[in-house]
Length: 247
Image (tube, rainbow, N blue to C red; front, side, top):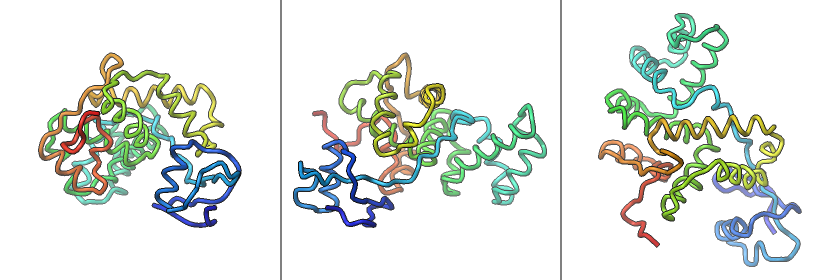
C-alpha cells in the first residue's frame, strides 16, 4: 500500500482502485521498494500527476521564429523585452495581433528551456544541429512530447522496429490516458491535430522520413550539450549510446 502524499521526482502517489499496467506497477514497486506491490491484492494504486500541457499546436519546431528571437535576447538578455518587440513590431509576420502574441509566447516558452550557453550553440549551429536542438526544446517544454520521443520513437529505434505510424501515436495516447484523464476527454479532432503537429516536428527535425524513424546524427558539440543534463537529453533522440547493445 502506497502512503498517501509520498512523492518521487515530483509525482504524488496515492492509493486508489483503478488498475494500471503491470509494467508500471513493477516500476513503482522498484522505486518505492514495496514488497508485493502491484500483485493481485486489490490495493492497486492510482497516480496523481500534473496535467499535460498540450498547447504546442501553435507551431511545429519554430525554426524561423527562434532565429529571430534568440539574437534579440542576447541584446539585453530579457525575454519579456523580446516578446514585446516580437509582438509590437510583428517581427514574426503574423496575420493578427493575437496570433502574433500566441506565436511569440510559444517560441519564447520553448527557448527558455535552454541555458545561455545552449542558446549560443543554437545561434552557431548548422541547420541540422538547430533542428535537433529545437526538437529537444519541444521535448523539454512538453512532457507529453518528451515521453512520446523517449518511450515510443527512441524505443522503436532501439528495438530495430523503425516504422512509426499514426496508430503508434494513438496507442501512446490511450495508454497515457490511464494516468492522465485529461487525454480521455480530448475530442478526436484535437487528438488528430496533436498527432499531426508531432509528426511534422519529427519530419522537420529529420527524424521521420516516409514513416521510418531516422537515426539522429549528433555532432560532438551537440552531444556534449545534451549530455550535460542528467539524465542526458539524448534520450529524446533515436540514437544508440555506446552502452546500449543491440538485443
